[in-house]
Image (spheres, rainbow, N blue to C red):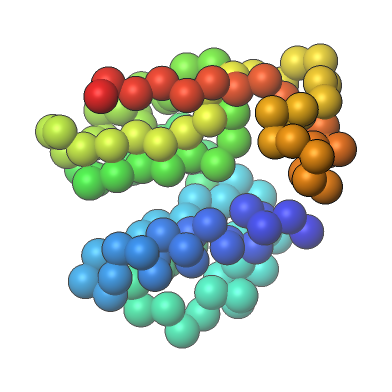
Length: 122
């Protein structure tokens, strides 16, 4: 099972923002949601829900992090952000696999990745 499926990214966000901020992990698959709930139990600022992520956040959020590449973020993700806050997601869609040579000679360079690009307003 991959790290995102287990909730490791959500757990990292929960640790980064601290106990006063709530982090919600949205899983589309009910079995993955249940597994993540079990794996992440005991975290007071982290909850896992099973739903379609394109419908989240349900209330204004200070930040949204998406862990898969998309051609365009869902409208709800943009509209659900509080003014001046951040949306973090890989921009790109699955296409032909290409070798990732930008990393150098590390083991990661031998893995294959989809094309993605960074976009920032700064």
